Every structure is written in C-alpha cells, then in structure tokens.
Image (cartoon, rainbow, N blue to C red; front, side, top):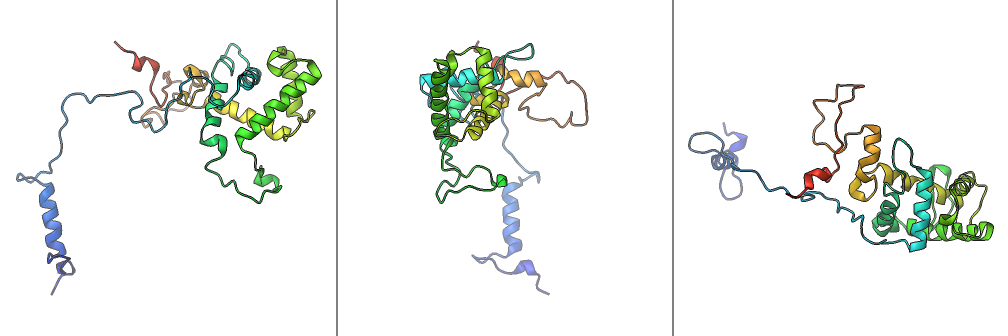
Length: 253
C-alpha cells in the first residue's frame, strides 16, 4: 500500500526523502545534533539591543518654549511636591519627559485616526476633539499664563507655591475656564502625563534615578522573576533596573 508521505514533492523527491535529507543536514556523523559554540564573553554595549531610543535629558527643550517649559516645571513641581519619600516632579524630570513625548509621535497623535468629522462623543468615548497633545499644551499653557497675568500680574512660574496650588485646584474643580481650551481636559492631560513621567522607565526622560520605583519597591525591568512570583508580601531588597540597565553598569574603567 502506498504511504501518503511517498507522494512526490516538487523536484521528484518524496516527502519522506525530503524530510530525511533535511534531518541529515542538522545531524552530524555521530548522530548528535550540531550547533554553534561561542567562546569568551560577548561584547555588551549599553542600549545595544534596546528598541527605544534613550532620551537625552541634558539637551535643550525640543518642543516647549522657555516660558512654556518654566510653566510646566512649575506645574509638575506642585502636582508632585518634594517630601521625605521622594524628590519633586520637576527634579524627577517629568517636564523633560512631557517635552520629549510632545516632540515625538505622541505629540501629533501619529498613531491615531485624526481625520474628521469631529463631533462631541459620549463620556464613554472620551475626547473627540481634533486637537493633538501639542496643540492642547500650546493653547493651554498660553491661556494659563494669560489668566495669571490678568489676575495676579505674573506668569504661573513666578507665583508662590500656595498660589500655584490654589490655581491648580481651581483648574481641577472647573472653577476657572481658560480661553480657547477645554480646561478640564487640559488639566487631566497634564496630570496624566506628569504621572507617566514620574513612574515610567527612566529611558524616557522622567523617573530620574528611578526615584519612584525605589519609593514603591518596584524592582524594574529585570530579566526573570520566576523564582520570586510565589514569594508574596516579602521585601526582596532588589535594586531597581531600568530598560537601559543601572547607571553603575555603564561606568567606564
């Protein structure tokens, strides 16, 4: 009886012959599968295999003007004030994180459908506006500073901490309506981006020195947790690790 695998494949070989010849290429004369052998330690370079381009935190502002940058730093400093648990949102690099995000694909909503028609949606659908994050920040920060000039004679960054706290609370509670911008959506956007900058991997420009991860006890982007997943409610004492490693791994010498 003819076996199914004896049917001829293209080129005149049967399936059985084709499989047999393929296996012969993988198995040596001793009958054992062969493989490549690496000797020595492979060269390792920081970020060599990282898909995300590390943010240059020392570079100039890539989206914000100087006044806008000062305003955002003043905002994030009050949204996450320094205390005995961590540094402030400003010192943690939240404004740098937001600036780099706005300068990139997120700022223009490049991965979202942004063609009309635009109309009000249901609360479940969220914001349906044609404005991108870049446009919201430009309009919102300008409107906020105009309001501060008119009401307090100074831009937001020049006000005292108590005044800034009071203004942010009024924005959150919709007691102030800024010109040319939906104030609640603007405030929620800045708050959300500030939190993202504080808790995201430092490779994106925020969470400087992994400050939030150390505060929470989060060990970061470690390779393997299988030996620890069953150890509940236990402080493992791990030093957090970024996607790009730890700073001491990149020390020259």
